[in-house]
Amino acid sequence: MNRLSFLLILMLSLPSIMFVQQDEMMGPATCELPDLLTAEDGTKITSAEEWKRKRRPEILEMLKELMYGQAPEAPEDLKFIVFDDSENALGGIARRKQVAIYLEGKTDYHLLDMLIYLPKGQDEPVPVFLGLNFQGNHAINPDPAIRLSDKWVWIGAGGSVDNHPTERSRGAVSSRWPIEMILDKGYGVATVYAGDLDPDYFDDFQNGIHSLYPDLQKRGDNFSTIGAWAWGLSRCMDYFETDPEISKDKVAVFGFSRMGKAAIWAGAKDERFAMVISNESGGGGAALSKRKVGEDIARLNNGNPHWFSKNFRQFNNNEAVMPFDQHMVISLIAPRPVYIASAEGDPGSDPEGEFLSAKYASPVYNLFGKETFKKVSFPKIDHPVMKNGMGYHIRSGKHDITEYDWEQYLKFADRYIK
Image (cartoon, rainbow, N blue to C red; front, side, top):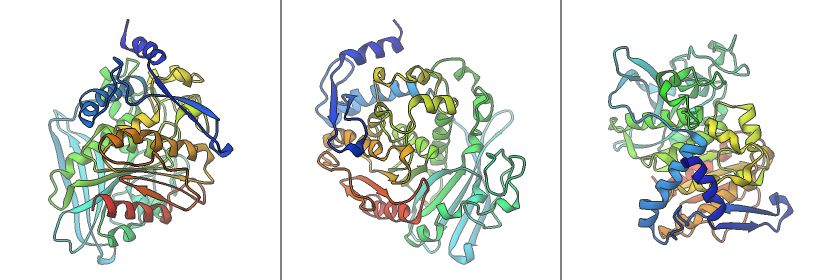
């Protein structure tokens, strides 16, 4: 019997938890979730040490096999080239760096370009928010010195022509990146265009960095696009460990929408990230899949077959047999701080399901002495809740990142990592 069959049979035999919602706004009345604290051999997990030694590795491997796919090991040799270093950026308020990261070999492979803004006048290493962007680094701010991407972008990208950026693309999504506000609070901002790592369209895993790892493709637990994006975020963390101006122990990985899905997986896998932030990541991100609200698994896999591994497709319209759910992904972040955000006008992301993932990850935080969301109810709109390293809000408005969102993230970071 292979491991995949074993896991599916095991799911039917292990204890599960049933939650019952009293509020009709909370979606399905009942939903059965796998028990976080029962190991595959039936052992009850009762301590943080047992969690780290036994249960966490089990869940991590299961998610690699059945959802996100396997990923390459961290490269032994990365080359970092700082091709831009300005002490007078954004009208004199910021230090700007642009770093090209290469995979070294017979022919070096240009993996990604990272854009970094740091507040000026800091005597100590700076905490940083790191996130992927949708349209190219040049799109997050009109700063003319940002290298204009030459990569493929989706057809709706601002200022693009024939799926490629133009000068009119600069600053196209700057409203989502209030850099000046973040710098003023004493934090840096770092970003990478997700398309540097893998373009966001399906080609059966042939382009982007997938082309470098063909041995990870002809298999059910193949190297997926979400996996590639998360892997790339960890390579940025490799760079931060070499930069004395960045506090490598205070890096928050964050993402919006599909980039939020990647941020959660990056934070779950890579414990170097001090904090994880999900902004409306929905199905395959923070939201519970077994509720089948908004982006269900069939919709995720049929609409974007490259996001997750091939094994994940077996759960199309079959969520009940899954031996995991997204609360288990969130649990892997414990005891590090995690913040999940939703929007009232974004039912496709299932705000209640996003909140419940945090709530049902709480037992693991409890093992570490952190009483988080166990007794917390779904909050009112525009009333954030932050408790012992776990945060959540649902704001008014649509699927987007707003200044309101960032205000909450900065408050949360001030409390838990600064």
